[in-house]
Length: 220
Image (cartoon, rainbow, N blue to C red; front, side, top):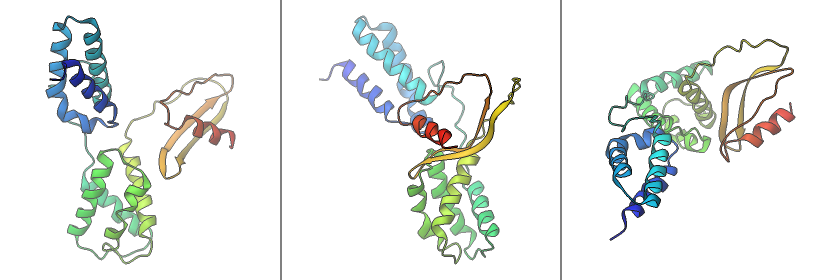
């Protein structure tokens, strides 16, 4: 029989492997209330510390600042019809004629929506949709289409509004840019505004692109 803390460590470690709240949200109403109950009733300080870390990890991944996760609002998902409209607009911009039925377009858009809703905008994953796009329109640009589709979809996914910077001072930089490392999109249509005389800090987890961003800034 495994000790209780062993199970709780498994919950914590598995949660650390998740990078999207969509993946963990269905399990929060089942896991979080039990962990909160254990935290208040368990006597061993070491075990209580393990429970506390597991709770903190679940809250962070699931974006649950408080409560037991039972009354969370539904996660807003990207709809396949939205991505289908984007796909058709890309073809129209290139002057390609869409020959597939709407059912085919919706099917490939469902596959794309699954990627978008799991925050997977890595280009190789989207390029796997290229064979399906060959059925949508007769074009030799299926790989290019999937890459642009991924970028456009990531733009639609990022709906956070950036507040206008009202600080006074001379702008050293005020630009919108995208940044990639290999085939992984790190930043897409991000805004960078720096003012003379200010000091800025760059914070982020390991592997999120801090050094890549600094090199890009250094290279102009």
